[in-house]
Every structure is written in structure tokens, then in C-alpha cells.
Amino acid sequence: MQNADAHNSQLHRYYHVAKARFGVLTNGHIYNFYTDLEQPNIMDEKPFFTLNLNDIKDSSVKILGKFTKTDYNLESILDSAEALKYIKAIRKEFEKEVAEASDEFVKLLVNKFFDKPLTASRMVTFREYTKKAVSNSINDSISLRLKSALNINENITKDKIPAIENPIDLNNEIPKYITTDEELEGFQIVKAILREKIATERIAFRDTQSYFGILLDDNNRKPLARLHFNSSNKYIELFHNGKDLGEKILLNSLDGIYNYREQLHTTFENY
Image (tube, rainbow, N blue to C red; front, side):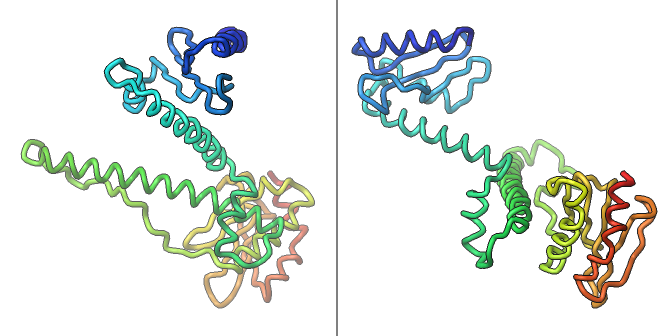
């Protein structure tokens, strides 16, 4: 809104001297609803409800209905206002964590099942795990809702619409591999070597059924190394002779990765 701060301050003053319990600030398209949840007779700085006429949701219509003459109930609206305000705040914080998990959020989840010290390198790894876990959970929830909706629609219209050949499977494919502690330890060693040349946040990994890939900028076209730990013999695949020419080398132990510091640096420099 143009001059929103000035108008907000003006409404704040009006609210203080008036007997009204609600204030509304609008530019004709967006309506912000205020009340005094934090201090009596002092309008809150943030609205408890926002109605956007360009994006009206069913939930917004239900909330707006509480302000109609027939359904108006002050106590009921105030209870709803408090719930709306804090649910909005919690959702905002949750969306921040989904976009970029904080250390506090990662620790809150990981400490419930992981009893080892969360070192700096472990935090980097578990932050990636947390982002993937939350993202997968949201996607699964959406898929389940879509599947339920499609099933309901199918039951209603199955006599009217011909069957679809090769229907889409909305269930996520179950991974055929498990990321092991050895692979994660190997990843940490490679990252420790490469951090001499590059910021650690640019070093990512993708586990596959065939190998554990370590990538630059999470780009499959920029492999830094691959770990082949799915058999009794352990190999590291290096790309120092060219990004498309991998060389598999037998490892006697994970510490053997440190012997290939120069080759790993060369691979990065080739990009």
C-alpha cells in the first residue's frame, strides 16, 4: 500500500481514542484487519487477518462472514483473531525453515534420534537431510490429497468417463538404496579436502543405486568424485583427467581418500 506506514500510524491513533474493537486499513484491493490482542485499547502493529480481493480464498470468506450483522459475535471474533494471528506467525516461521533449515530446527529434530555430537560437518549434512525430509513429507501429503480427490472423482464419474490407460502413480518411488555412514564419512573427508579451494556450501552429494556422487553446486554435470561403497571392495572415482573421464581407484580404508588431495583439487580447478 502507498504510504502504508503513515496510514497505519493514523489508524493507530484513531483506534486509541475510539471505542471500536477493530480497525481496517485498505487500498481498495487488500484489507488488513486489526484489533488489540497485545495491549487493551492499543492497536496491534500487525493485522490478524488480511483479505486480498485479487486472491480470495474460501477460508477468507468464512472469516469475513463473522463480521456480518447476522453472525457478529465479539468474543468469537476475538478468539478467532488470536488464533489467526499466531497461526499466521507460526506458518511464516515454518515456511522459513522449509526454505532454509536453521541450526535450531535441525537440532530439535535430529537430537530426538541421533545421540552422537552434532559437529559442524554433521550439521551441514543433517541440514540437507532435514530439507529433503520436510520437502518429501509435503510432497507426499499433496500426492495423498490428490489421490484421494481423484478417487472420489472416479467414484462419482466412473460411468460417464472412460477408464484412463496407464494411470499416473502418485506415490513416490521407494528408493532402492540406503545412504550409509561410510558414504557420509567419505563425503566429509572429500569436503574437508576441497574446502581448501572452495566454500563448503558449494559441495553437495546425491546418492544413487550405483554410486554416491559428490558434486559441485549440486550439478550432475560437475562431478567432483564418486564413492563406490556398495560391495566388499571400496573405490573412489576421480575426474582429474577431465570431467567426463572417471578413474576408479581401490581404497584400503576411508583414510586413503586423503592420498588424492591433488587430484580432487585438479578436478575442481578444471571447472
